[in-house]
Image 1 (cartoon, rainbow, N blue to C red):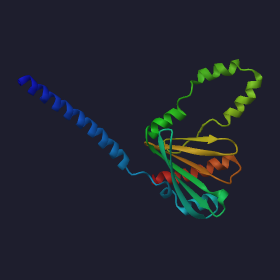
Image 2 (tube, helix red, strand yellow):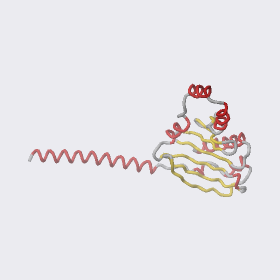
Image 3 (cartoon, rainbow, N blue to C red):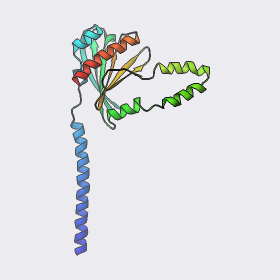
Image 4 (cartoon, rainbow, N blue to C red):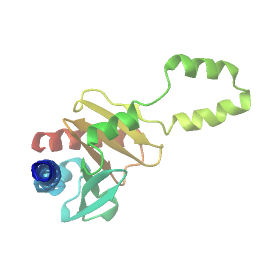
Length: 196
């Protein structure tokens, strides 16, 4: 009888520990879900967009997308001329933290020495293809957030800016010259970072 009582007591203690662990994990999950998400529509004012794009904001359209282990909360600042609209997205954690996603996206490349060796061995025909690839590779942008990268081609692109455990993605429309798109995106990013 003592053995059965002892066995039952051990089972109850073990079950209590497992239940407490599961309950703690569920609570942690709920706490993460309860954490307020940043409203991307609150990161810029209509006047900010108008000052950069030269067109008044007619409406803001929030949306949320999940994918790649992140939740992307986005706001479209639709201007009077729709092609001049601005998009701002804020990353928050789902299955992966935004900072971990950032490291994977922007810091998982091969060392420069590997790239140099590869460049020495490539044929001339591959040179043209690589130059085209270079135009779409992330390019570091200095003095914005903790880190910032421009990702895109000469025709379209977006600015990604890291701050703490989140990052922003900003894109502007109706700007033909890439350097001007980058400059406008940086100006909006600095304004948005002040409200993040």
